[in-house]
Length: 467
Image 1 (cartoon, rainbow, N blue to C red):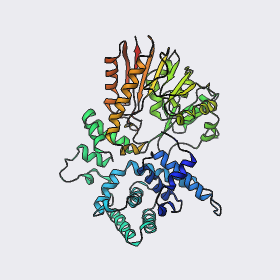
Image 2 (cartoon, one colour):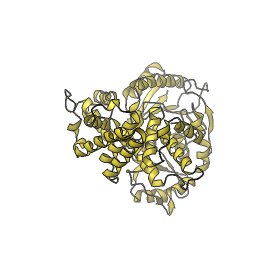
Image 3 (cartoon, one colour):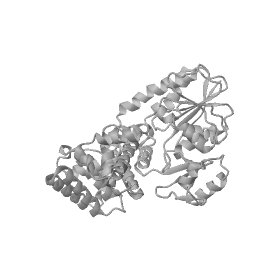
């Protein structure tokens, strides 16, 4: 996921319509800015960064007294953006029950209403009257008294529904069978193509487990640097502070349960000094499950991205002399990560894995392939908006990468193929095709996050050996 610069953030917000751009930089208004930027094609992470950066710039402009959004407001903004995107389809259905023609309203107003509905249904700490008042006030500022009255009426109607929208039977359209993919997709805010795919390939029970996991707020996770002098003590302190072990050095925390400090230092300070890094629990565990920490040959991280798996391997003493990616924006942060963690930085190169730069590689390969991301919908809820064709396009890209990399492998070396999706065409079927079309490759292991796991990201990994 590409990061964007401050200049890009300012330029992005500057494209918003004048009245929307001139709203005061509150948490809810920043969330609105971010959602409109997501509409324009940004990821949720990029859009949120742009909105918050713009809010800080406004607050610190000459003649203002504020120094930017307070931490609590920034956290609220983040929760609103990610929470709304996770529940967007459910909220749209609710609004269709209280508005005669919601599609006729301006899209920004629908976001204003949606953010308020999210507050009414999912935010216990936000008083209902505050969510309604803020939305009506914003509607008035943007569209005048007429649509402000529409907003007020719609939200009062949502309040009169009481807890009905929290139950499955509320989302049963006429003529639709209870419990089918369409019905449960609405309840868990998933497009029909995703829910239908899971019903078809995994069965209804597993599909509902995956849908429930994708609807909940994601857990946070970090990785203790095994090379750090206080690694053992820090790991024990984090576990004692409510963390759950992930592999040997990972610790995960339920939403809202992550401590502020450990071992007498803030987590930020521990991160700065190289004692820990943030990395999703699934990304950590797939490396353990495939046995990559036992590798005894040099590793080429082919799709290194921001370098999370590269540094995780380096921390465990695995030689990773080469890391490549097709985005220099992502790769650019790897040297800084290695310096912070006290690790030797690999050689990095900007290259596309479809056309690898080396004719042969006398070592192992890690291929954390671009994928549809259906295993990380809780953490990256904007993926729900992507069309199914994007997932199909990934199949061809993955196939080309694996086929070309297989020809560069030496006998006795291994390749680890990893995705963060739950879609057989990008996982098991890719491996089956690779083995059929490449001589000498044999599958040693395949692993996927158990469907019944309540919070772990959906990861797939396969380990193959070149005979």
